[in-house]
Length: 427
Image (tube, rainbow, N blue to C red; front, side):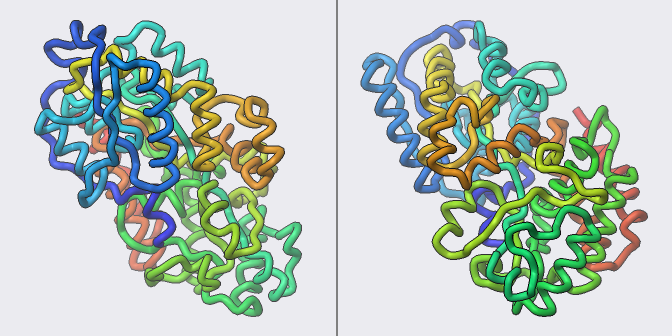
């Protein structure tokens, strides 16, 4: 789906050359070295605007440690570009759009510096992000990424379509799988839409972050796809989610062909699965409401976990002035800059108590408050070796069985679990 691509960034499996991990040969000297640095940031207009102002503010106060900033160079994906830069030894000092799913691969390439090298870094991350920080540690217990911003995934629904179908648009019946399926049938039957919800049925590994994974996070109370080397999705929670989606496809409530555009914005689907970026994208196009993803038994919003769709910041080992790079990273993730990020982009800084820290913003912008509350209950992708390959193995089995019905979902996911565990065990 078109709307998913800007945030998922079409990540790819990268060819890797294992170079050993960590700080590099001159890491000790570089860790304290100060001077000019180069950074990259994402290429969407809101993040460009935030980054330019952040850099201008830093440079005006630090004439001897100026930041040279640019958008991530064009390529098939930002991660492909970053991976190539690591291999070439010319990665920037910081990248403000590092996918947590790619961190283990960048780490294996020797491209990332453990932030624990810098005095007070672990404390800064943990104080800012609270308990959520734990999900971003690598297997050696160190932070190779600063969790920066999240886009907690929720169900957005078109109120006009609900009313046309004779449904309550203020209190939609979407809490349980049974409710969701019954509502979906009415929407397709009487709402004038082709699909109740239309997740992208394509095979890119990250698409599972916008259909299976948020519901699995909710149903399981916050489990990741892999924990302690074991795949978690073959248990009763994973089976329940797979059966739910199989029913949606089997009843033609979700479509099996890819929609070339935004089915929700175009009025072809009554609902979509999206994060807070949806506010700016849909606000003037669709009269919509937001609810948590469904679970088998139904949960309150406060209880419902979901996928974070987060991005981190990585500090790269080719950086010669890492002392400055860490200082810039601290500055860019300060409470003041987090406010500016929130105000400029509408995306949620990975900071504890967003609604308390920025109460005035959420009072003026109430549509964002639901996402800020959901941000307290997010689940990240597992930080394991071969993460992207593991997600692809899962997606292939899910597509084949759940979306297209060519194999029993339980059988397919069991086979995928063995492959996922094998990949996650690789060093």
